[in-house]
Image (cartoon, rainbow, N blue to C red):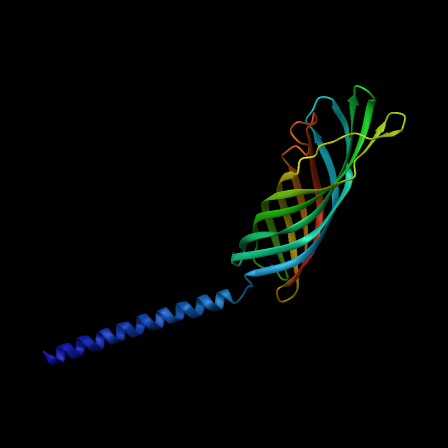
Length: 225
């Protein structure tokens, strides 16, 4: 009986030892895998591009593309190596031009130079490294705060006039990115992305008799630490 008990104890001891060794191996492998990438990534960027307007009122016409620009801070938090959440802030300059008919002054050309503070939140995806390169994608939402406007209005004869315009204090946008990360040292990399910023709410207050969306397509160039 005693021998049987000792045999059972020895078998249980071996089983427990194997379980503990397996558990320790899993923990070591998990830590090792986690150590192969940085869960946090921060950087700076600039974003030159082209902006255009979507004119949703019948009396608006002849919208023209203009050069846009933004700069900002980028922060990525990765759940696993290739998937995470991105955020930060953009100081975004949205420029545009279009025409409309006014009952008093006739045809008016309006030049818009709006400035927004945009807080983007998006899902970031990236491939495994291909040499020193990763291909990246991002889909997110941009919540913009109206900061400033340098609107100018001109009559058909070229005379400038002053008009009262009420802008929406919030800008909503869908942001889609496709880009490349080029690693120059460990986790530090240069990034380039093609960025589509699609405004989906009127830039004017709801009581203003014009409905305009400001969109942009730009090239984002950044450096991540």
